[in-house]
Amino acid sequence: MKRFKRAAVLLATLSLLVLGMTGVPRAQVVEPTPSPDPHTYSDPAMNFTAPPEAYLMGRRQIDVKQLGQDLEPVARWVVRPGRENAAFIDLSMESFEGAPNQWEGQFESQAHNGGSGVLIKNKTPMSLLNGMPATFVEVT
Image (cartoon, rainbow, N blue to C red; front, side, top):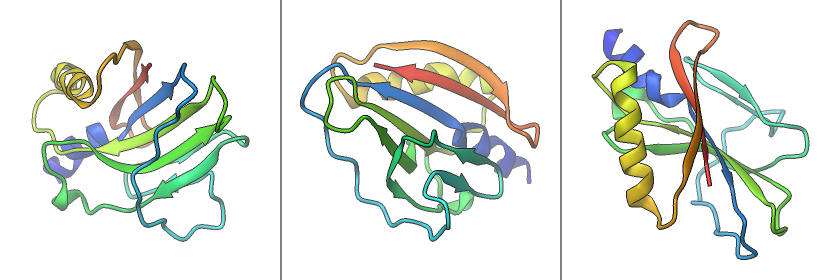
């Protein structure tokens, strides 16, 4: 159970990617989880509802025991697709055994290694409804 809680600390890595360019990258293809509402992602650790104007690009369930040390996308929505001010809402998970405040540096390193020109701002620590720590991060 302890490993599940620590792994799920990162599962709430909610990053809002605001793209200021006309070319919008394509999302990774993931198998969607059947749900009556394409705006909602739910798993044993959390529930998230995207804004009504967001379009679901992909969603999948991952067993927490299968998580590795790298972020795994579990859901992605796009807001204002095809526009210069398009935005993405990504939910990702990874396994992490350290304290929640130690995870932030690891996340920033992964984000910078994942793409050039990444700017991380507005990091907001929070707790999920079940008390699990989470961080809202805005990535441009």
